Image 1 (cartoon, one colour):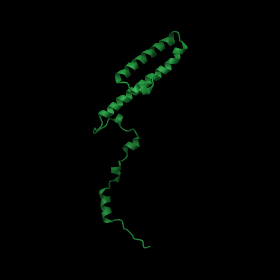
Image 2: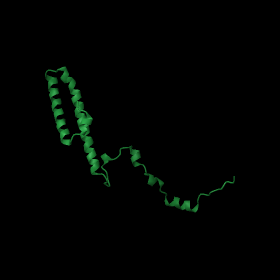
Image 3: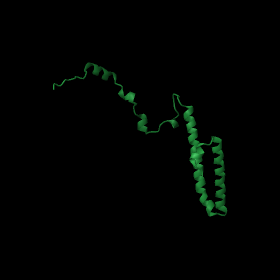
Image 4: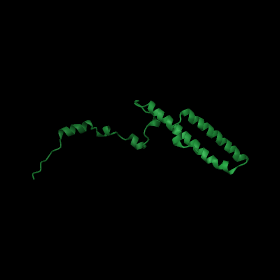
Length: 121
């Protein structure tokens, strides 16, 4: 079984090589399952599948991290690298947009300023 922390130190080529080996092993296990069906080999199929998933996960994370570094500081970030949040949150006004006043609001604020009262103690 392959551990994710071990895979993170490997390069892209090493990961793909490991992936190829695991896939080959899986196909051999499938053949063994059909032919003689040794219990140990049938049981090993699950762990090999999980190992393949780990390798692919680490590979995809490295790819995405490389993309993030490539587009760092760019004006537009690809959609798959943007924060997911929710649809409503993505469409909500920003803090700056929310704080802006319309022309009419500005005019009314200037014409009718808040009256300050001093309370005598």
